[in-house]
Length: 419
View 1: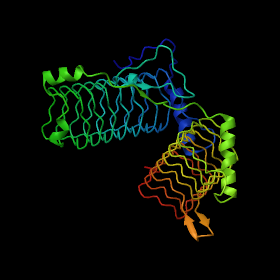
View 2: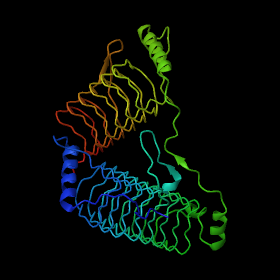
View 3: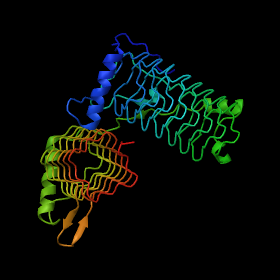
View 4: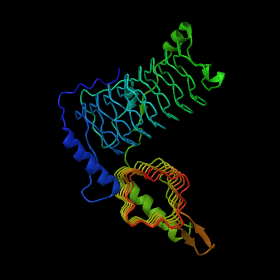
């Protein structure tokens, strides 16, 4: 079952105290002095008013928010892992890519909520103990509980609900395109008018659910359970595998990394005749110190560099698509012509970084820095040079852009967090 909010040591805030936390968080998002991220894990916020507040990126894991007012609150990218939200008002709430695994949302009114790519998976199916994070003894959220929740007119495109409970939830006119609904208990749910194109219903229990007027392909229902016999057959299947968020190799040995960097310098200095190009793909560099390192033309698709020190590093024309650079320090780094498409740069420091085009004199080529679909929520781009940078569909919610240069930058579909 979802976490029931029981925890021995909790701090209860008054409304005035919470208001001050929210004001400091807003200053943090806007890059103003005196700001600080809202960090309220396991706090008791029962019955308090957070309506209309911008809490993007806030840390609220395990918090009790019963009967709280969260109407039209912005919680994009926030950590609400295992929170107790029963009785809260969440109408019009914004939950873009929010972590709600293992949360208790039973019976909550979430009408017209924006929940694109929200994570509502079974909290017990994911290893939360990633590098730098500590598990709390006794805190073991189970499946997210959305039973009897009101999700009318909500936008849940590409939402992840694998293994959760949502019995008798109301999804009338809800957008569920591309949603992951594998093994979800959807008995007696109302899907009238719901858009379910591309939703994965493998192993979902749809007994008693109303699909009248729902938009979906009949083939999408082939692997779902609609009879008692089909439901029994699904129950006999092996449990879903635990999704290990921290499926990382051991950290790179400093000596081995030093040798890789030396070989890369030789490769650069000899135009490829000796040494070898540095490829960081699959290497664990979480928290590594690479300040001032020469990483020009480095490759590293989906490299793990969370919390790494890359201050002043030379990363011209680097290819780091899908890299995890959360909370990394890239202040003053030279990223001219670098490719960071779909990279995760949440809470990253890019103050004074150079992301302008790189001119290749030998070929007269101009390489534009590219951060297409990159996630930069809560990052700092103060005084950064993003001239001509491609930021198409990137998420810059809560980014500090004080003094940043964005001349000729491509901002098609970019989320600037100003709405």
